[in-house]
Length: 347
Image 1 (cartoon, rainbow, N blue to C red):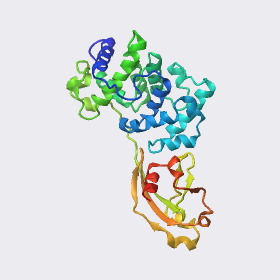
Image 2 (tube, rainbow, N blue to C red):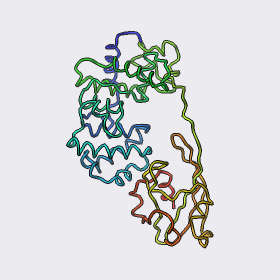
Image 3 (spheres, helix red, strand yellow):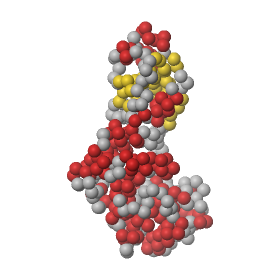
Image 4 (cartoon, rainbow, N blue to C red):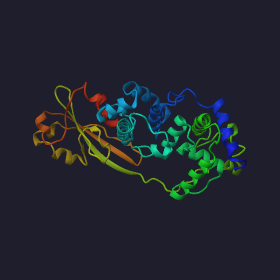
């Protein structure tokens, strides 16, 4: 990077003041609860999706004490559809710790924040920077892209030592003065640049405030950054779902075990094969089973090929299965996997 570190921070802050995003509901606040909630929701989730969930969460759980007092089922129910449900479980655990151990007040340092459930180094840095003006770096996916390009940092980030080196470089670039005002603007500016200008594909280098400092642009290869050679290995799995319905319209749901796919959520009974599904029901009910069209549900590391099998069944047919009947006015409030919610909504 050409130019001193302070020039980098100044460019980011000037650009954010005139061109950065301002209308997101979790911006322009120093409330750690709101910043924390938005940071957790935005992990691996598009802003447009979070815009739907964030206000609903605040309406239901306006502060960390309200979230801590809620049941995990209530939290999972409201989270349903956002995916990555371990985030919701950690969100609830973290709220309980903050309420009980910290009197409802989040710790003010990034080091202390990292001791809380579900809060990693980057999330802790964001909360500390936005809410407490701490000189702490963030390094989410968008920010990694901005920094590796500007710095020409071409070390492989799949190696932990190289990621640590990038953390050191990110820390060196942080503002050094008037931190209470500078850190929130600088941190937001990096996020905004990564989300709107320094895109993974076809970055808008001509309008980027850092173009004169950017090593990757000078090399003519911004899309080659960041470097990460280790690819996630995708797998595929077929599952059969028993969509049992009572005469009343109630559906049979059971809580999924932890760990595993959809851990802790309510779900239709899951089987490894149609034969295994059929074997769990008395033979006299086999003729009621109907195969609905199979479909694929994509997870981060795995493609699930789902085979719904529908049937109207009495309680006696399900006596060997874990679970219970949930009426049409009950199951919508449960934490359900997105494909299961869709199946039940279409029934």
